[in-house]
Length: 361
Image (cartoon, one colour):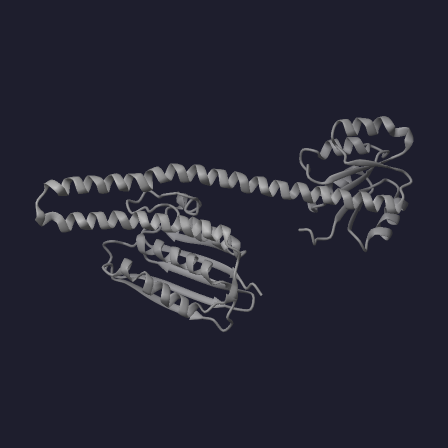
């Protein structure tokens, strides 16, 4: 954001002042001008600006009244009031209400105004960064709160289940031991998947993006091989259509996480009574991006759940619902790559995930 051109809105009912301002500053800033408060308000609805400069004495609405009128809807632009000495009471009133950053005497001096605009933008930029940091802190707090709650269920409950199985196994017939071992194995694998996803998420959030050329054909073959122990008894058929005339540049480890977690989701929510289970993987790359589609013929996702499946720890109502972390981790990894993900799904027929990953040249 620091590299962007400063966007300035200047409001003054004197056309000569507007033209002079635009002529002097058009090379340094992106300028918007308005001859009235009403025109200025319309411009704010259409354009994002960083600094607003407004003359105090205007017909219909004064500069102070204008700043008051936009304060709630447009709180972020930094305000500068132009005024003469006779308007000092208006200046005091505006400052006391916290509406303006500073006031400048008319007729204004080019150098003084240039310094004021630069300082105002620095304030705007600092406040922007502070808002972003506050959002990140709130997100981290919410995630921690959800994690503590979920950990009590996803870690403690399986442990309690394992202890219960062991207790029963100690007093039961030896012939039933394989059954108990299978139950423990299944529970431990679920716990391990939960822990692995948490590790992937925090690693993805903390580690910088490492750019390299991506070979999707090799990567997807390796991921399918790694997932073979999940599909061994399910008779799931993978169909690949990979066209990569251009090897895009991106972060290989994060793309692996994204594809792996979407495939795991497709495997987990297969149609149990279906004879023909398949997962279609389509990849198409060009100089700007890669599009990855992963489509299954599984149980599908109800419409009311489709906006929630990427939320942390969200679980659907199906009995096979997992830890609610995998798709969230995939979406967060995509954010790091400036990518996006959408889902199309029909209950009882299957789901298709569409992933867009920009080429990070």
